[in-house]
Length: 263
Image 1 (cartoon, rainbow, N blue to C red):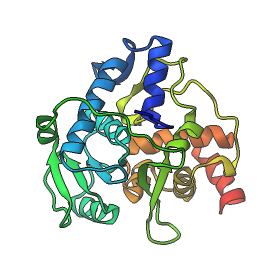
Image 2: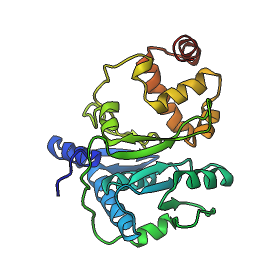
Image 3: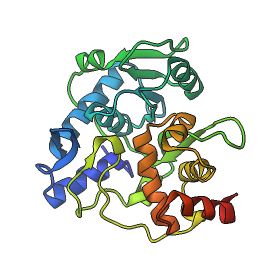
Image 4: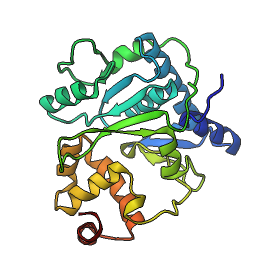
């Protein structure tokens, strides 16, 4: 099957051509998952999504702890052309219910029980694993094809869903690079070898601008994460990218930069 610009196809192709298959891709504590294992599990998860009636373009809310399971659930969604909507699994129940309702998801993968809207299926990780039957093909997408969606901060109005495309991922870190062997699972990104030459406020993604706005206004990582339905670890990851693009090295410098250029 042609795979277009699907990001999963890109990282699989790079791992094969660069001889990374046996290299560590992610780590969670003492657990290490190789690229080969990651691709196999993600393919199986993609097949399980299809068995649950998910189609390309459908949204899958992923409400899981920050473990390898979160990564494979995320990549499994991208693999089949669905849209991953990662939501902080430690959020309060009312926050989760609201986020899933607003995401208009077809399926929720969750590690604990909470109400979901009518018409939205919900499965536990164990149920998802139990429905695995074979592998899934990589869906053909375009650079403009939606890959994942997160919530904006809501500082200037109601929080809204911000969708990132498969092309956005290429622009963000040029895929997977060979300069690092892997990433901690909490960052939910692959190790980046390339460096984005863009800099300044205009180089920030919509999500990064929302985080910069909140942090620049004095919110902590945890407060920012709660406002954007993210985990503090994910906010911290974005902050490192924001610092690099803006050429700042502290939250105070970020606040000054935001006041001068973004406010």
